[in-house]
Length: 364
Image (cartoon, rainbow, N blue to C red; front, side):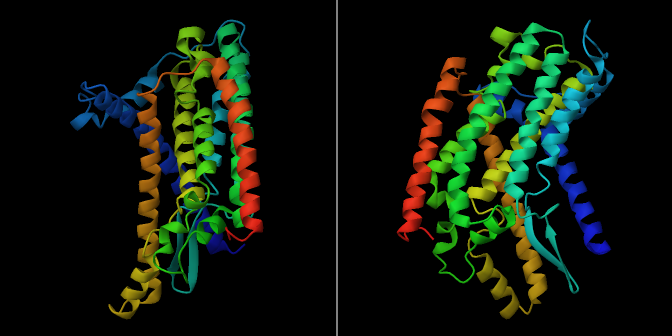
């Protein structure tokens, strides 16, 4: 690997991690604002203008709270649990393509931390490790309610990962690759009719698969109505009952980072990623009619695509929060029944339908 490329990828990874933490931080503010709006009450309005400094106040509170270790707890694992949850949440964003390439002279760089041809497997593998952070934290707390919450989280994540993986197989059958960049580029409209801009997106080809993936995403991130691992009416506070200070903050931040990552993955898999309608027509118009260099026009299109991709991501984050403050949580038996008896059979049926459509040339 050439040094300039390695240096650029290091910069991109640093920026992605920094953005993930910043977005997770201000998701706590957005959660309060959206909850206040939906419940017709006043949200955060004390810390800074419009309450914008509230996340900073929360961070100061977390850092200055007393460190607490329960009696009989395994201190090493008690600290390692939230660290693992946070690390896996951040690592999963490394393979997401946040934009097309940017040209500097004769060099072209991608707005992506690392590009591997098994990018989707990377995301699933890293996300699967996140459940160990929850299990370790619940077990090391030496608290039966924390342990019950951790067991619930593990069984819930394993159950819904099956349906999520099966729903993804249909997309992989259409695209023929595990690379998130290739999946994104296949949803572009270059060389096709203009009206195919949005019809190339996988949401048009896999509406059932997207619905299954979306429901599983709520369960994987432990969000309402699937927040049974943190069900305070039954488990006090769930797997992080005994946590305080920044260790609790890591668990809370990792949840919001996971929301950001799963929103980005859904945007890439089903909604064209950084592609947007008329992008190639705009690039060619700038290059031919406005006298722009083709590289400069492409850089502008890349910047617009990145902005619009984040717009899609923020729309999904808003949807996650909207659902939380609208629907009540399921009972645990309802949650498991939905995963095993409804979503998994639907995902298998979706695979069979997709395979038939590909065989007869309806989907290409």
